[in-house]
Length: 246
Ligand code: NAD
Image (cartoon, rainbow, N blue to C red):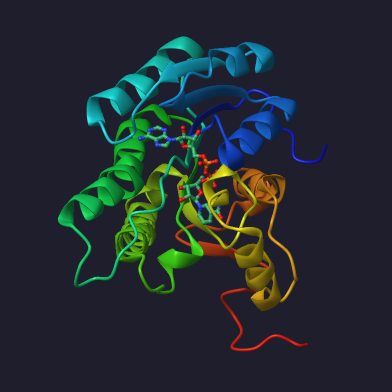
């Protein structure tokens, strides 16, 4: 594998499923020590990869602080952080959607990322890279999805601001904006919906979690040493076109 991460200490939230899980496996294979923070039990996964699992609800600041402190206490410091845990759903029109949906979206998708950056940065004494998971819907709107969309726009804002503030410590901060990725998060879609969606994706298919993990991996290496403060799309050009060639 290109881009070895030997000797790097990585913390990955939402590492138990989908994009996070693919990244945990990829980072472990590349030689990183991986600390998984997830709300669901990932003890077995941590054993399989020779890493560490800390039960963490990213919406709770004290739990994320514990995750980062424990990672640094155990392995000496933190080099790489993938703030990836997130939830979707919370559907409804702006005029009807209950405020509780916005609270849930913001507490997990936005504050979860804020908590991760806030409590990891002090442990990144060798510099390093932080990657936050935003979404294509952190750059574009979507009907019936305003809690998710607004929480993901906020991830882009947090990312670019943190990149400016942490640059002098040689900590690069970027976010990724996935389009349609085949993970459990999109399991609610019917086959008919999926077929219809594929027709408007220029590459004609959903992305895989492994393809997203590959981007995260690249951004974490010195190959990306001059890339910071960016929102990087990985969406098969779904967000770029008004039409698709028939
Ligand atoms: P997933 O549902 O497969 O995985 C999400 C993981 O996050 C799970 O392991 C879950 O247990 C964990 N999690 C949920 N709430 C948590 C909390 N409060 N604290 C800690 N862990 C929590 O989803 P995925 O598709 O892999 O999504 C990962 C990220 O990618 C999310 O931020 C999501 O918004 C984003 N994203 C996904 C897609 C897509 O099409 N799948 C597109 C754009 C963005």
